[in-house]
Image (cartoon, rainbow, N blue to C red; front, side):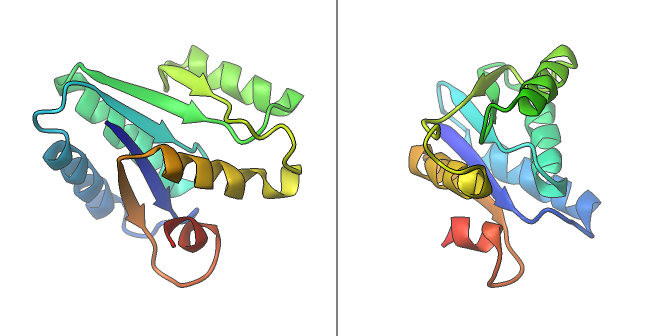
Length: 136
């Protein structure tokens, strides 16, 4: 099972939301042999979800936390190196986005994540922006 996360860059009730995300994960991975979490790594919601995944992984060992990168610039490769050195993710995926202009890479990466997922956990409060477009 692949679970992805869609949400806004800025959060205001992160403590309550953390528990809600963690509970949604736990409720939906019962009886699943293997779970892969696709995380975007940009903004408050992505960070919160990655923390929730790490929390779940402490109890349920058949989980893999994957950072899905939208591009492979030199700066992004340095970011990935730092994330991996801190053991924040188990692996990294770069979807087939080589031909996508950098300006649209995050949106296209989000579309790819949705297409690959069996389940989406979303936090979308308004009907505009990238999180809304991804959820739609």
